[in-house]
Image 1 (cartoon, rainbow, N blue to C red):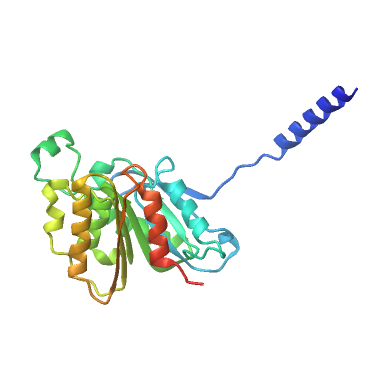
Image 2 (image 1 turned 90 degrees about the vertical axis):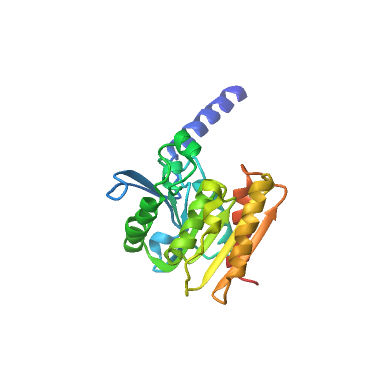
Length: 267
């Protein structure tokens, strides 16, 4: 009899659990056709807790490599954790993950390295992608969501190369830059030889690299020193070498430390 009652209760519990299932969501996914890129694109958007019932305006983080199977989920998680009132590491923030189609195409400018171009013939279209961010993505977000003027860009590897290119060529598209393990070896390190465009708006720039080989460490440090040399009172500049991390796992800890240094409110 006891065995029968146990089975009955177990079945009842299972039915009850199944009846309470509902989808879990941390935001929205937007699919649209880009006139600039001439292709369908996807944005993954994390909204802070209580966004729907709030009249607040929120800063925005734009995340390269922002597909759900890339960096969107764990970076959105860091933002949620960091914005808890008892943590106070970052203000409540909207995260816009730009899902990839072809990152080698979108994140690189034209190269003079014939061997690389032969191997990856679709490279060299970052100018279009930057225009896509500036003309299509940002205006849509600003029109559709309650946002402030504060915009941060996060990019790693080739994404870090693109973030550096934007910082050097069109710095005022974003207020803040988190550049992790940038692939500045691309095109014989030509971007490092470029003179960055001047800007007058306030900037926070965080550069990080892990234990990823001498070339990656050197070029990340050279980027920091280049920016430090031309630094002015408009810029807060940070550099971090994460010796326990490699190219595969450096982003998460780097972004965590960037949030602490760039946005944390001391209690």
